[in-house]
Length: 117
Image 1 (tube, rainbow, N blue to C red):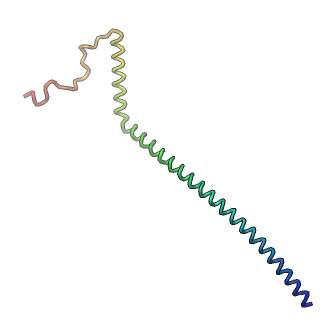
Image 2 (tube, rainbow, N blue to C red):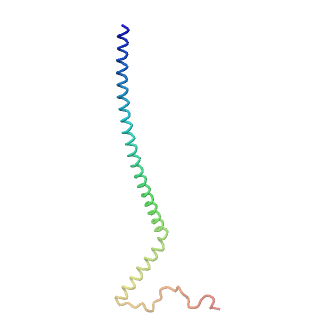
């Protein structure tokens, strides 16, 4: 009876070693696959991070351009109005109007403020 118990125990131990060995091999393969996936995802993350940084830099440059447009809106609006006025006068000249004696703005003085004394 003890001999049968011993043989059963050795068979069970052998089966357990075989199962453990198979389990260890499967876990090693799973670990290798997981490490490959980790490496691939790390590379993907690196590329995505670089793309994100480039996008953020582009957005920042657009933001700077928009800020410039907003800050200089009044000057640009005044320049456009001056251009439109000049074009209107040029069109009128071409249609026969005479603007030779019309003074638009007095931005210069003949004599400076010190010369009036």
